[in-house]
Image (tube, rainbow over all chains, first blue to last red; front, side):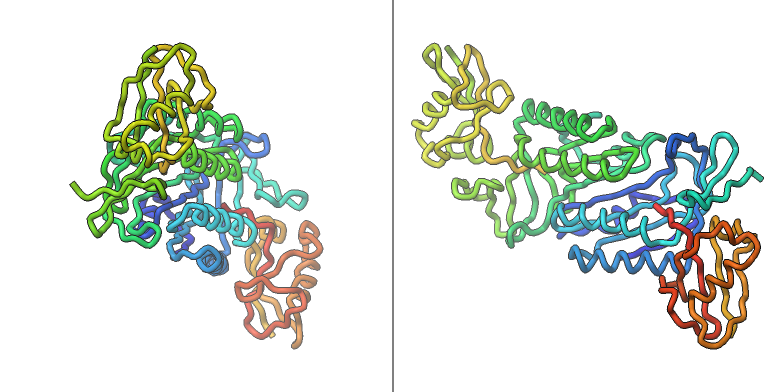
Length: 146
Length: 146
Length: 80
Length: 80
C-alpha cells in the first residue's frame, strides 16, 4: 500500500500494475479528472493546492484504514497538485482484492474519505477569466486573473 | 458505448481512453483477472468459452441498460475468451461519468449483470492436472487433462 | 419442424456433442426440447430444468418454437 | 509561547498571508489561535469556527498548545 501527493502527471496504468498480484481476482481503478463545467459554469483549468505534510498523513491514514476494513494491502493512491488542464487526472486510486465486492468498496471508501478529510483545495479557472476556490461558498474569495 | 467478446489480450488503458471526455469528472475501471486459487484449490490457468452470438447480445443489452439507468453513454466492456494464464485479464469494464457515484454504480451494475446473465463458462485448470467447469457444482463433469 | 439444439460446457461434455438437430411436432415448445434432450444417453447429468435460450434470448419452457429455431441449453454461467 | 499559524486557499487570500508567527500566553488552546486570527484585518471573511489542525492532525478548539506547535486553519477541503 502506498499514497502520495505529487507534482507531475498521474499514470493510471502504472498504479494498476503496482497492485497486481495473482491472488487478486479484481482490480478497481478510480480516476478523477478536471471537468469542463462545474455547477453550470464553464471551467478552463484547475489549480490544486495542498497542506502537503498533513495531506500526506491523512491520505496514508485513509489507505491504512481501507486496508484493515476491506482486507487488502493492494491499495495505491496518488493525488496531483499544481495547475491541471481540462481532462487531466487529479487523483488515481487503484485497489486489487481477491473478490470484486471488497475491491469496489475499498476504492469508494478511499475517495469518499479523501474528499472529506484530506487538506487539498482547488482554485477553478473559469472561462470568463475569474477564479474561485471550490467549496468556499459564502466565504469565497473571488480573484481576478493575474 | 460498446461491448465485445474478443479472442485477444485485453488492454485496459485503451478502454479508459475510449470513455474519456472533458465533461466527465470520474472514470471507474474494473479488471477481472485469473486468480491462482479458487475455493481453496490451486489454479494453473483458465479456459473461457462463450455462446458467442448470445453473449454479445446480452452484453450489449446490459451496457444499454446501464447507460439509461445511470445516465452516461461512456461505457465500454470487453470479455475475453480462450485460454488465459494466471493474472491475465478476462474482463475489462470502463465507465466515465460527470459524477463519481454513478460511475461506480454503473460499473458495478455491468459486472453483476454480466456474471448473472452472459452465457460464458470457464474451465479451470487445476495444479493437480484436473479440469472443471466453474459453477457446474453437483452436475459438474470433471475432465482429465487431454 | 426442425430445430438446432446447442449445448455448452458441462452439458456438451455430458452429452458428447455441442450441437444437435432435432425434429419436433408442430406446436412444440422450448420445454419439449428439454424433455427430448433429457432422454438422450448421458443427459442424467443435466439438471431437471436447465435454463433455455431461443434464438439467443432466455425463454420460458412454455415458449412455442418455429421451424429453424436455435434452442440453447444454458449451464450455470461463470463469466467475469 | 510561539506558534506558527498556517493559512490556505480562501483563508490565505482573506488575510493576505499564508503563514503567521503568533505569541500566546502559556496554556493557550487551538481556539485561542482562532480568536487571535479572527481579530486580524480581513478575517471577517472567515467562518466563526473554522476547522483547525495542530501539528498536521485535526484538533478540537480545546486542545492545549505547546511552544513551536504548527496550527493550521483548514478551509472546506475540495480534493479529488
